[in-house]
Length: 490
Image (cartoon, rainbow, N blue to C red; front, side, top):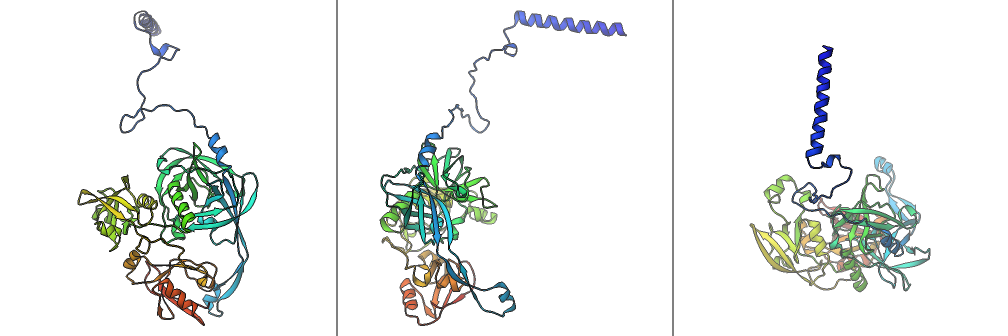
């Protein structure tokens, strides 16, 4: 047995040696036994749909963009007044023993970031950074500190414009946010967590993203954020989102986080929206915003039954849920059930994309709209209107001193949707009697005061101005059933 096993092993060894000898003698040189690396002419592809050749690119150098942008990004510090508020103690509500009590709120300090956008001292930041503040100071990268004055704000887009009396300042040029693409490297520059100027890097992970945060400060919120994974923390608000060539492509505004600190995603307002808002605030003191005159149905919030019944699962574009009569869209022929697919030749697939395009224009501008009806594409031209259904320039909505709050009339679309003929909406509660003596929330629609109808801002001013005693405000909250009543002593 041992002899047979040895014979088999010797035979196998000889066969292997003969095979290697013949392969080395008569076959071409094999790359598996060659220490050199041959040049391959075969294209390299990522696995996916299509045959897209991937070319290697040089590493991105962030240094020039980072060094230039930090000089134009400033640290903003704010102070709010101390104030007395009237509130009901929860225990008093339970036992019913006492009425409302007064509490003193001491002055509050806040901070954020801003971007110098012109050498003569205009600075853009977020509305929520400077809202309801008494004073604003700005500290530059070289530690120089000065006072800034507020030129104007736009809660709908969360933009505010400041001005300092300085000249020849380092500033940042606007880039074209339409040219921003998924996967593109970007820098976030600001003053997070009370630190000095800080630069972080990431990529664009999404565009035209809506997260609903601006609805907390405006009933006409416009959101079409650039989403990135660049680290952004409290204090970064109002800072710059910068391309690798050093241009301003967005204003950092929000983060998605379960804790309040950075957890992976940050959101910036596109530069093209910021530029339009800033120009309006400079020229008019308020934003001249154009409206199509249609109501949209957001696919993201629609049920599967709605998607199927309305054909949203088979069509691209923004579904027109309703059209306000006598406004631009109705006059141009748009109807309920249409799908808006392009604005001035730019494709729009979602409501945020549509709002972003419309936000660039003002009342009186004519825009080209492409829409689909019954499977066929149509083209029309729509004249945009302002919130009152005209093309006139609108100034500030109402004096902020009126009950300490600001107001605006309902739009034609809002009147149609809520089924009321007139009313005045509370846009900001401020620090006056409404916020101190009631638990009223923004968005409340006043329809009468002391049983006298309120049809306009003029009615509101006349009734409040001539009042000699307490006021009872009656109205409703859009989307909620029933009437609400608030008592206030101005």
